[in-house]
Amino acid sequence: MNYTTIRYSNRDGVGVITFNRADQMNAMNTQMRAEIAHAVKAAEEDARALVLTGKGRAFCAGQDLGDRGSPTDLNLERTLRDEYMPMLNAIYNCRIPTIAAVNGAAAGAGANLALAADVVIASESAYFMQAFSRIGLIPDAGGTYWMPRQMGFAKAMGAALFADKISARQAADWGMIWEWVADETFADHWWQRAKYLADGPSQAFRAAKKAIRSTYDNDLQSQLELEGKLQGKCGNTRDFVEGVTAFMEKRPAKFEGR
Image (cartoon, rainbow, N blue to C red; front, side, top):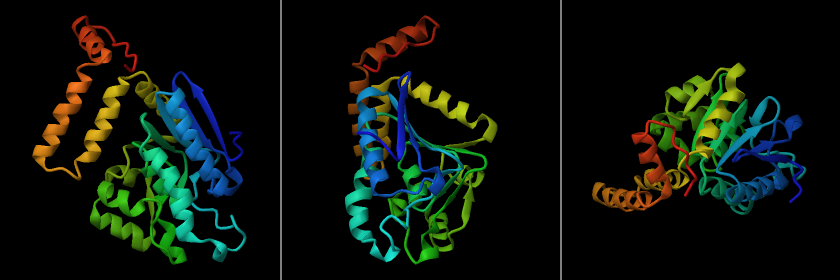
């Protein structure tokens, strides 16, 4: 696919999707959602870690309300089902570790797109906002799923009803994101984080994602059994042998992702 609303690059095993509608604060239209979903699936085949970030002063301002002329021309249920769901599922179910590098405003569906990633790293000047109630809507694009799990019920409800800006520092303090980083070191920091993942034990990362996400559906016994099964598979990888050997030899491990 020839991308027009995003850019995709792959360097040293790190795939980077950059939202490229800076003049619209990277608000998503139909084409952009399709391109994001396509690029995520492409990254699974040729990268070992994936970063999503924005060009300009915004990460993503959510839905482009002018995408189809008048906002009343938007069939919201159809748009969420046919366009948002494939994109969000591609990100959430991506086989490689994913980072949302939130460089600026992440509002509405843009905030919840970020939360679909495994890890969210935000610049100090970035913010998150569930802006939906300001136009008479509820949080969508997975917001009602991810927010209570990551922020807790009380803060999720307040974010949905009041539509306040949540600073990067607040988001980290609340457990909504992994960390915030000073603006001047942000780009280098998320690159180093992504490179660490790309150089790491890919099979173990995949198993960790599965185990941690399963905890909401399992009781303790079921979770212990799942841990044992996944750990057994990890123990049969070449990366496990390399990791133990490197530890014993007091050297950095050279993981192959196998």
